[in-house]
Length: 212
Image (cartoon, rainbow, N blue to C red; front, side, top):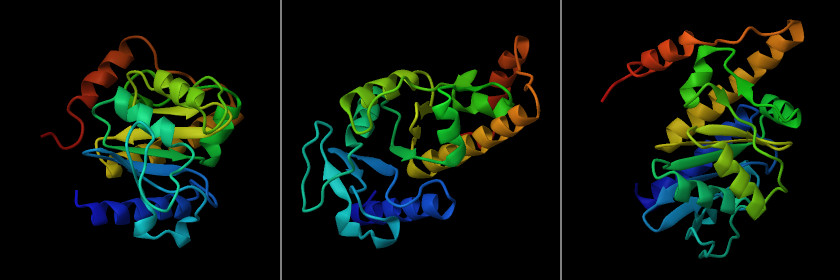
């Protein structure tokens, strides 16, 4: 992807998250993998004030170029790119229902078949770690093993995709499922999908959607 287009896509994606209530103010951050590392949103700038030149080109070791500092959560993005070669984009957000569930320090169980779309029979909640820390990057990668999204304890969520569109779709889907799960719990005890049904769901997902 051409660099200027990538910078513009990061801004558009950030504003999309805000417009849909998935982030507020300067919370959250988004990145795209590049040939030499990643391009990531800057720290402390509201989405409606972002400019293309403020997107920060970084190496995965933390070195960066330009006049603007990268997101304080850059290390979490970098470690995900190192751990998951298929990751082309990463979205970290603080949507209400994901945050609520993460504050219970619970994952999202297989109450609905769409949970399996993240790679397994649940979406895990990571262990707690201080925001913007190396430890947070480590626990996020651990919670993402064999998954494409996870909750971050007392914090929010993070998802990756082969491209930015997929990472955004997964972010929106995770927040939708978290809302539906908490709604179901408010009315009773959700019945989880178990046993042979999980294998059937996995088989169906292999042929779901447009196939290359």
